[in-house]
Length: 265
Image (tube, rainbow, N blue to C red; front, top):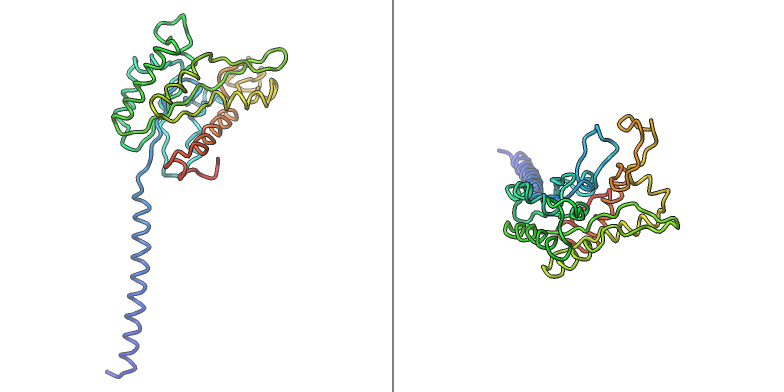
């Protein structure tokens, strides 16, 4: 074989090996990227958090739009259900459903308060500084037993303004009781009550109608007679509340969630 031919073969072999090396490296990097374990955020809560069907559009809960704020390594499973309190959610076996799925490193976000306040309904009512905290602790203990991470979320504010345009504080002692429990149990607390109160006060009585489910008659086919709902949100409002949740996640530096925040926050 001529020396020139041998040189060509050697050069071809070197180029081929380099090509294989590059392809192999890219494949390994891609495989590693694909093998990054997904984190699941489970939501336990009430109607202000829950998902809604298109038949109730534009009504939406903040949990319905939360996943859009993360990259594809975070999944949100919204088990929040309208009308439930911290007590009734457990009594109906809904926490148990979450525990059957939740895994090590997942999160359990817990927002209750709206229906715990129903003092005339023994199936839902809890007293802020005793039974409310006791039930919330069951969520915390259950999540930790599965090596998941509990996060307490104080109840989002309602829309009730005085004649002078001052927003009322509608959840009494429930937010402070939840924050106390967070300190006692060393659990992160997203103070959504305070964040939403500040936002709604800033927006004022008129602009908050675009946050909550306020619609004129015939404005929407799902609400032909109109609606004036000071508790539940329309989609634009749900997005605003979800952004507040994300903001506190950032401020609290809840790693690794903060490393998976997307561009929509």
